[in-house]
Length: 485
Ligand code: CMX
Image (cartoon, rainbow, N blue to C red):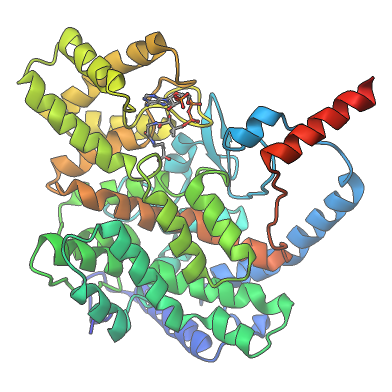
């Protein structure tokens, strides 16, 4: 059995007692599936818990959306060209996503804040420089930056939910080591459906207005369990299968590092940065949209998130981080230490001429270097500017945009997030590239679950866009022509 470890840590004091008392209260509340929100406790210093604050935010948020729809529901917000229907629906404004918006030139803003602003504004761990991803979760859900106490209480709450049921442990232990880690990740999350409070409440006929409450509980339970699932997969596939106990006094990033088997302080800080920057990238990308779509059928957060993870596992999406590393290793082997522009350019052309993509370059929305790439590059420049593989990544950054522009196919020749993440993990000894997308998956939960909770709180409908056959589209265009004559 993997369970949260002992509560006797080294970071003593009253603050921790408060956090633990609140985690206990939260656990009690969860067991009883309390729906009386006034029963959701303040922290003893008078600050509000995430659930309490979100329960307060719901009426004004739902009311604002209702009025907005009533006043402007008929306003046309875009037009759709035929090529967009065949072109992956690029640019069609058909999804509402509250947590973040992506500008093609500026990059991502989380509730209006750039990555640099997030790095400045969000609470940090006592021993770290990077923001706490649990604080980002709070921000994405409520639109507000939590206080340090609130962020720490949320860490403690999440860690109190980390225990995996026996059948999930058995499932993971029984899977073949050569099954891709992302397939294992998805299976473990689906198997957690047994724990779904939303599915149980729905079967008991819960009222629509309480959907968000059970979705909130499932989402936090899932978030709390993901570091254990990810680490169990990592340790089973690549190490001895044993993982350490969760430290209930440590934050999420520290626990993730610890469970994976990495105690290095810089690596732990990297985990916090990694979890923060990979979390959310507005709602249209495959993993976010899939989670949202499947969730719209009122599937539980476990089923909806697992569906999103199956999309993240694709090589054009999250798996690109694995592809980048494998591509870099082949490049390194081929050029035998010669990192000149000319050899790298030749290798890039070889890849393109073989009809393959340059992994880690290009984006469906962005039209400049991904600021998530830049944040990771800055981390590398700060901690290991002379690392050989980082120098290679930097050299590819100098050469690849020119080559891609010359080829003239991609709309965006600049690097994306996946171009840089692997080299950071390699430096600290997490060298198994096929595991990288699992880490991306843990992070993505911080971005997509808030929207799932919001969707349930505002009563978002089941998604059902219209599709056409080519024959029907031809009819449509013919009738438009006739009408114009
Ligand atoms: N290397 C070579 N060709 C590329 C390319 C790249 N990095 N990026 C785009 N192209 C090609 C496309 O394959 C497409 O070719 P065809 O016309 O032959 O089909 C053409 O350029 C136009 O594509 P686009 O409109 O610029 O890009 P899309 O919006 O269709 O696709 C993306 C976006 C990310 C899938 C694409 O850039 C790509 O395949 N990149 C490499 C894989 C990658 O890094 N994925 C990770 C993205 C971030 C994430 O989701 O994690």
